[in-house]
Every structure is written in C-alpha cells, then in structure tokens.
Length: 338
Length: 170
Image 1 (cartoon, chains in turn yellow, purple):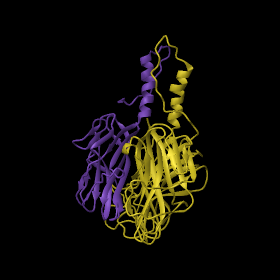
Image 2 (cartoon, rainbow over the protein chains, first blue to last red):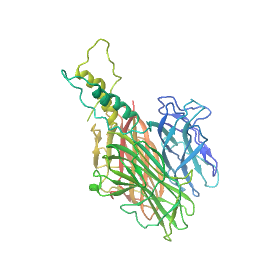
Image 3 (cartoon, rainbow over the protein chains, first blue to last red):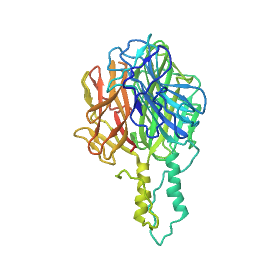
C-alpha cells in the first residue's frame, strides 16, 4: 500500500501512464520498488492479487479522467486495465476515479524482472494534467495476495475443538482442522470474469430495483467453478469483497450510468433479488465511460451475484457494452472471512 | 466472536500439550485468521447533507461488529487491537447536480477522498477506500460525505450508504 504524496506527477494527454508511488505505507514483503520504477509492485509469491488504485486529479472542465492498473502477468507484455472513467468537474475538491482487479502473478523474479502490478492514469482533457498530491487527496495503490487461485472444493474451516483424552487425536481430525484450514486460508474462493464482445444496454429513466444483467463470457479465475453466464454462486458462506464495473460507449444523449451488483440472498431485502447500485455518475456523450461499485457482502453458500448495468440517454438510445481492453466490463468476488 | 490478535504459536520440545494448549496454539490463531472482518455498518434513515460541508455519516444499522467497536453517539469505530485495517466507504445520495465525495477519517485526520461528478437526473454516489494503521483503543474511524449542493442521503435498499472495516495485517 502506497501513495503519491510529493511527486506531483504530470500525466500526458490521451496516454496511459504509470503512476509513481513515492510513499510506502505498508510493504511487509518488500515488493514495491521505489527507485527508478516506483509505481510497481513485484509480487513475492505466486497467486491472485487484489489490486486497487485511486487517482486524484484536479478540477478539470473537459474530457475524461480515469483510474487504471498496469501489469505484466505470466511473463507477458505490459497491459493496462482501465477502471472508473468519468467526466471531471471544474471546481470540486478533486476528481478521484477508482479501479480494482484481480491479477495473477506467476513469474516471480524480483525487482525489475518478472510480473508486477502498479497504478496508472489516463486523461484526455486536452493537455497535460498534474495529479493532486495533498495530505488528504492523493493517488494511492494497494496490492494484496488473496488466493492461490487453484481449483478447490474445500469448505470453510470448521475449527472444531480439539478432543480430550481418552479420545485419540486422529489424522482425520488433524487433516480437517489443520491441513485443510491452511489450504483453505491460502486458497479461498476467488472469481473474476470479463465481457469480451459488444452488446447493447437500453436506456432507462430511473435506477430499477433490479438492474439489467450483463453476461460475461471470459472467465479469468473461478477456482470453485461456480460461474455460468450471468450468475456467480457463492460456493461457501462468508464475507466477500465484491466489485462490479460497467464500460459503455455512450450515445449522443448520454446523461447517466451506473454499475450494480444484483444479489439474491436471505441476508438482504428479505431474500428478494435486488441490485446494490453504485449510484449514478455523469456521462460524456459518444465516448467510453466506465462506472464501478464495490461492497463487502455476507453471503450464504448458494447465494447468487450478477453484474448489472444502468444507462440513461435523453433520446432513449442504447449504449454499447464494451469488452475490449483496456476498458472492460467485469465483476469479481473474493472470500475474505467466515 | 472476539479474539485477541494472536502471537506466533510456540510448541515447546518435550512438553505434552493439553487440549487448552492446542486451542490457544492452533484453534484460536486459525479462528482469528478466518474471521477477519471487523465491522460492517449501514445507514437506513435519511440524513441531510448541507452544501459544501464535510459531514460525518450517521450509520444507524450495525450489520456486524464482533469487537463492539462502533459508538453510535460519536458515529465512530474504535480499533480493538493495533494493526492495519482496510476501510471501504460508500455513500449514496439523492440526485444532485454537482459532485459527491466520500472520505475516510481516522482519529480526525482525513485520509483520502473519492469524489465523482454526479448527474442531476438520478441518484448520486461516491466511494472511498484506504488501508490505515490504527492503535488499539486510541484510533477511531469515521465516514464523511461532501456535496457541492445540499442533498439527502439515500435509503433505497440498493443505494444505502455503508462502511466496511476489515483487519488486513499486524
């Protein structure tokens, strides 16, 4: 976890640019290389990392600003994955879009080599923009190993009380309560899928109680294999970090858009399916806009979650759902606790 | 369930562990690692937010708070033990033609602010998250909202404001 507090980096117009992180808040495995390649985190262990970034822009009056994450994954080339992308306002305290993704890191070679993740920025406001570096408004980035991402069907650790003599401490007990506990905690359920075609999202005038579901046809990770079409099913009970992102090419009458998480769980809304919306954000017409939302939800095993989208257009025209990098439509979940 | 942050277990050579030893050396640390989340809070009644005024959010519903850190009077959550906590704050509002910002505040210090332009046609939203170091019994977390125009928070089930706090690391 780190921030940009001193650099006041200038971001070139219409260019995906890595963001320098000059202040480390927490780096327990010394993965962040602060010199010469300062924005990037070189994963010390193979696995799936939850990467989050927020980029603080000043007041701006045209174009778009976005939060992006950059990565080299699996020894491949540099890839940018775009997150929230919004039209800025001229005189707010700042404009701060957010992005989060699960990213596999497999080529573990150390600083300067192999896989890495880091924050990036994009703006097309017409000229170079200097990022905000204030004590309470600044770009930040975090990366945290959340799962090995390997196929599993283990349950949540039962954490049974150890038996008292004369009951024998069996291998079955130890395998269930020690071995499988460790295996579960280093490889809990993770899921992420992307939309990789293009489809239409019809215009609506109000945020519906249950949003239009968006299918995803490109599964990135799903180690409990519970995703199909538009529906991800919670494989075990617990608290999940849930993230939804909707990327649209808007039409000429674009007014608003939102991303949502459609939940069916007895823990919420008396079990009636509904959508947790991120609220609406302003849109720029005839260009790429990206909305996001995130929640930590307590789900029971077999509860379901889907990605939902909302778009409002003054001419009632539809928007196009995007699936092409770097601006993609996606949803992910990470089991975080029992 | 309220468990202390466990230290590294030490198994002593030659000692025959009792059930209580195995509980403290194995079950308790594993349970702590499994539980993880520290608090989830939600707002279900409308709160009026004055224009251009940073306002502490009054969360009125505790979804879970196993360490009982939430203080409804001060609208703050007190750290039960020292370490790093990830805070996720989401603010939902009625329509407002301007911007809405959410901000994590730790012991009076504003850490970061997520501000997003919001259309006048539909409900607004801002989100903010950060990982913060906290000292047990001293540091506390609040959520703040800022809007360029006066607005009410939303209580629609899908647009409620919420704050989630999760223990990340010692």
